[in-house]
Length: 138
Image (cartoon, rainbow, N blue to C red; front, side, top):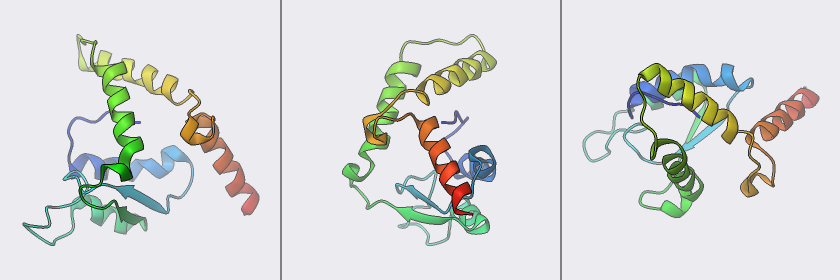
């Protein structure tokens, strides 16, 4: 989870540049929707977005969900709704620093909650399992 200042290819590209280091392993593929924070409007241009160029530079495959198919991003949409309800809805922050500290605590809690979609493991447990499997494979 990451709190960003704006929903843009600039922010998503900057995050990509730190993601592998933060995760601790090479990322092979990222799946996104066709949002303007990931891709350019295909009706206006067929040029690649900054995000797509950054993916290419990092050697990460970009997989897109089908346009207008919310069933393909149901988990992400549900996660965004839960974050909105649990974190944003009833909070007012006195400063940006306070908001970031609060979000850090929220993200830490969320990453330690077991989820059905993760076979009743936490996101942190899934990450640890993945890293261990990668180490054993090498």
